[in-house]
Image 1: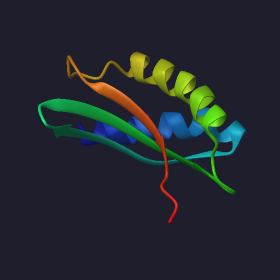
Image 2: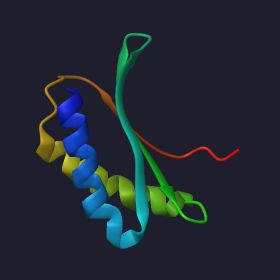
Image 3: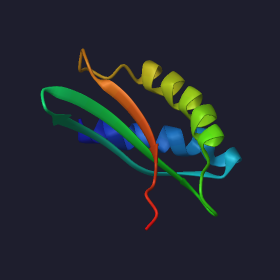
Length: 83
């Protein structure tokens, strides 16, 4: 799974580069009997909700093509937390 996540991150970085979006992290975790594929995005100066929505369309398309072997999981596209 680790190699698959690395390849996914690379493809997402390539696809989102033109929008100056940084793919900070791609993780696959199980929490409370649910599985989450989480893609954490960032952008210099911060990333707004509209940008996340547009980026999610790109992320979803690439994830679908990657054919993740897990049958059921939740795709979660989030912005990097700023403290």
